Length: 357
Image (cartoon, rainbow, N blue to C red; front, top):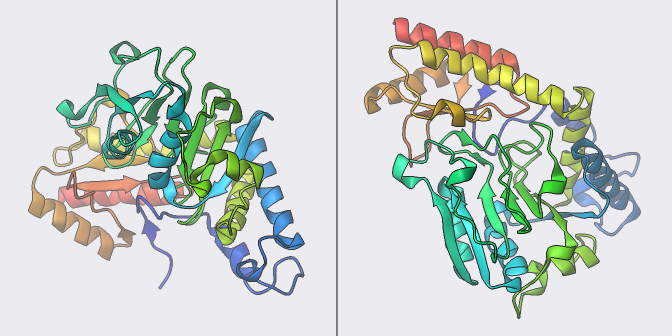
């Protein structure tokens, strides 16, 4: 069987060139006579890999020199707690923008460690619209403000970076990092699970300013950002193969140009699907047009049986993992960086043909 067009929200499609290179090096990386999966994380071979990956990430995202980069485990879900534990100690208070299920999860975890409130909550509109800056009720005494830039489940995205004054901004970028240019200096902490735009599940990337750390006490050593910084992500064995694959993905990103080029490519792909939705008499997008995600296109027919028939027919035609999240139903086409435009074009053709039939 040939490769399908995989629209999974994560773990998601990866660049085929990165996969082929990994396959070629699976038993012998760089003449070491070992797979990366067999190497000591403290040996010279892996040390070269992790240093190269970090440097490549710094260059692609233009990360300022005073920001630290960590390669951890536990996914974004662990960062819901880890970020709170490391920052909320300054004032004991924090603000959360609740615009989807993942930011709601982070909000719930943050409450374990201090006085946490929602500076905005869009659940009343079904998480279909991103709030304007003027709608954010921000506390100047908060230790930080947390938000999730792209809401994978509901198909919305913040098109601006919130202004928070002197209060550090913490952002979950799991589903949109590397998809567009980013001013890292606007953030105190950025974290991202790798399994959408960066590599395989199991790796979490954290980018942070060390000067904003104010941990609660006591804090488990592994969960202390300072401990991870001090040991260069080597407090324990990091997800070595995930770090290696991130390096290969970054090579692919750089071959395509810069992140401005990636942004244009992603917007072109998304426009193809949104054009189908906007002209359709069958498929419906409930997302506010100004809040539409470029990474996750969420839609429905309005009929559960018809949605199910579409998903099954699409899978038979080679378009897999289009079923929507259990919280929304319907369909979801996740079109991350590595989804080729051919896949989006063919899906659009299939949607039109399904409607005609």
